[in-house]
Image (cartoon, rainbow, N blue to C red; front, side):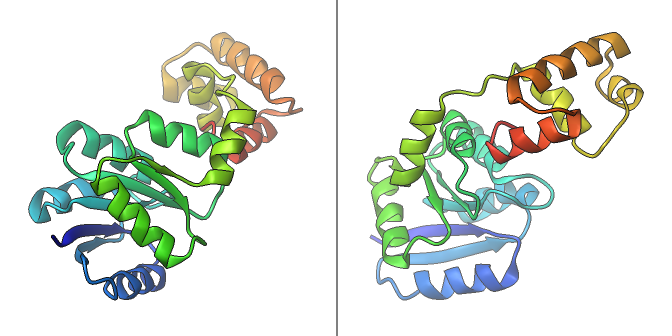
Length: 202
């Protein structure tokens, strides 16, 4: 059986390299490529891959959101999230949205090919070091609303801007920001957003 793969990676060079390496495998065929996360679902509908390899950071929509869409609409397509960023919080979120695998991009191609075969066989494949780090780190301490407010604050937006964007009062935004800053151990809201992003909580 030939395993049909969809590649979603915004860097053309990386996407081409992945395709070339996977094409060397006798039982794997890359049937579609996209460079944006918001094109994944349409490409999967059209080409019906067995596995979607999803870069975590893409324009339009990130790999985690694309994995969530695939799990909801095309559960037969197994999502494997690839990342340059070995952040335990990303791993936890990938599992929450239904990804079948989570690997860092510097994994050997033989390991990637094994992972593709494993997820098609119904297994879950997770980078070992990240799994250990995720267990040590635990779940995000941020509530969903605190995370929303920090995301909005990441670009230096004012309290009034954030309140308008999220349809909250300025006092409520200040309360969420204060709580999030405390939980991240940061001194400012921009620093708190950076800490949360680095840990994969946003």
